[in-house]
Length: 258
Image (tube, rainbow, N blue to C red; front, side, top):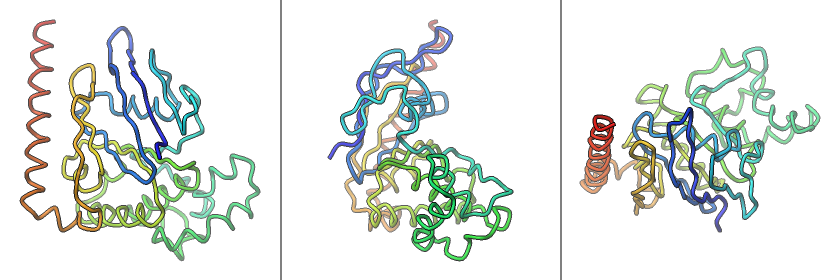
């Protein structure tokens, strides 16, 4: 079932077009990534999907409803975990519920059963300073999940972590998306991460950013971590890098001609 769809999203800032004619869709239980070079408009597109920004033209539909420029309907997690240091973990993760009017104790009761699934059991009454970077990101993801209505937007959530922690969270997120049937749009500039996590990779290329290539990753999620060591993984990576390199050359040529 289709949960999210955009039609012809175009956006400019100060007369400079950043995105042009972006049309994507997200199916229930699917993870798609928006992969592109810095400055290709990835974060701008996520802001539009979340309703925090309005496109100059085009529409965003959530389960068939036009939600263009209407925030609060899709959960959005930034690169930083944005934990409130003076609040306990359980009160950090329940913040979206409390903001919507749920009583503190009811919010805690709703959130508590999810702590084991997110690898956070026993951290409920701790403070953010008592958690590792990986655990803080899990708490931020739980907060995003509790505030979601079926869709999670992630803006490079693993990029600030060390390689080992990032790999562990990749494996964990693949597992939890299967078990909890999460639907995710992920921004990344890491080609390996996109291949490991995505069902489809949307390549945002050019200036302004356009989606001219969409690559399905035709490998079961249960095999992704082992797949990274296989020749087929290298072939996905080669194809994507060729497209991004060509896009970078075209962008540079366009800047010289302007």
